[in-house]
Length: 467
Image (cartoon, rainbow, N blue to C red; front, side, top):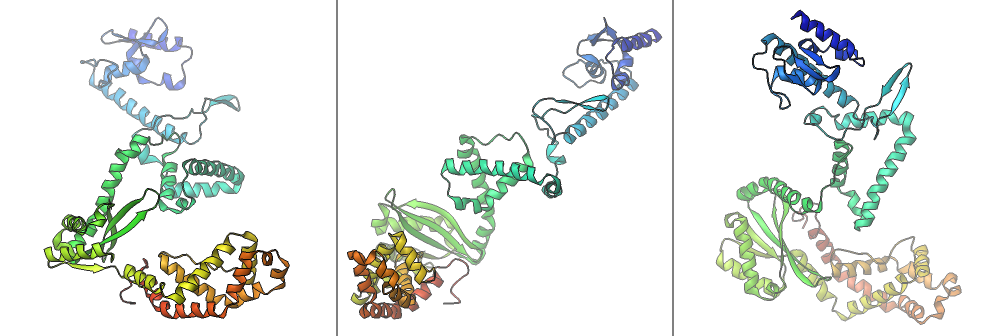
């Protein structure tokens, strides 16, 4: 036993490159270096030669490692000593790895600190299972970045500009609308990427199309559970919102469910053939009632087209406790459409449409108009088509004096517009008393309906109390 210890001591001294940490390794006490090779060690108990250094020798004594077969009759105190040492060393390596994770380069770089060479840690390419438990929390990260800005403000700005440039290029390449940057999901995405750190592999097209999409659908279904529970307690309304896709020429109906907790989207249906047949529309509405639950549904709301009216009556006949309710906004929109067919109103609208088209197709004329109207526009877009027309009429009524000043000013006379036939026609309309009388007549009829329509078509608060 003493010879073995002497052999171990000689082996340690012959290693030449041994450092203090290696000499303190207790595994060396129970092995003999073979032929001065630092990687070859012989067990002093069973004389087995291990060729992967002292680490494999310790694994041979402790057991539980696939790289070395366990020595079954190893003294218990030896196994306990080496096992404790290996556990402590593993914890130290993990802590050191996390300390150096944030400040690494792509390659190892040697620097000189006094007389001792120091090697920077290389970039970690793998993340361990403990990383998510020891990473800095977002508030700590933000506080650290704020503290660094005092000294490294310019560097931080350059780095942010580079990151934002990359995000912007993705927006441009993918043709994404700029208002998508206002979505909260973008802020959440950038925060999660920052928490992950370097080396994130983006999701593939397959992951986006299938597993991630399925996960998001499951998340949305989970968020709808409280709504569905409320439907059973307080009841709900099924709402259908039909619209036409002018690009692909398809008729589409969106189905939503409304309750005191709010409105939620359920599904979309293409109804190009269905919308022409009241019986097929009834079948579609009946299936939606079945999906939501007949006992939960109080009413079904659709627009006022004749086929929807017939489908609603059929639904009431089959399910007597349900109510079919026409859409108030669509009903008011149709009333405004009928008002627009009155000759005086129709004439005023046609002249306003001509003036709008002529002015807004000519940038110099738009600039002149805005100088006289205090930077106000004549055209006021709105959600519904006929509402837009009447709101535009109200803008003309407000700017009547300013428009008359424009077409009778010296600036107008000195410009090229009086020489054009369209501009002369525009001036004639603006100076006509009958044109302004017709606008006032149209507004007197339509203003109460437009006011009610803007209330019922709003989405910020329930309108029934205000109606």
